[in-house]
Length: 104
Image (tube, helix red, strand yellow):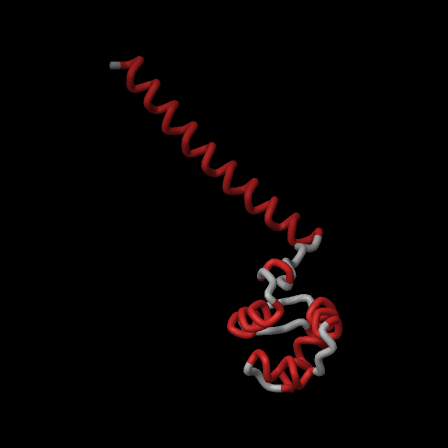
């Protein structure tokens, strides 16, 4: 899970804690704290531990990735294709129903 490395570091430093102190408080390894502050990568369990120790909500640390322009275009093209296919099938069914009602 991606979390804000700078926020974790800022929260730790604002309390005057070393990385080892934070690791001990969260019951995680020093290496895990170093990885979090460098890469912003943590497991859900580690995230919960950090939030408990810092007494903050998860949304304070979680980084929600922003899709790229290309990803947005791909989603839009897929959505347009599915919408067109659905509309075609529905239109065909409605047209067949109308013809059935008119001819019967």
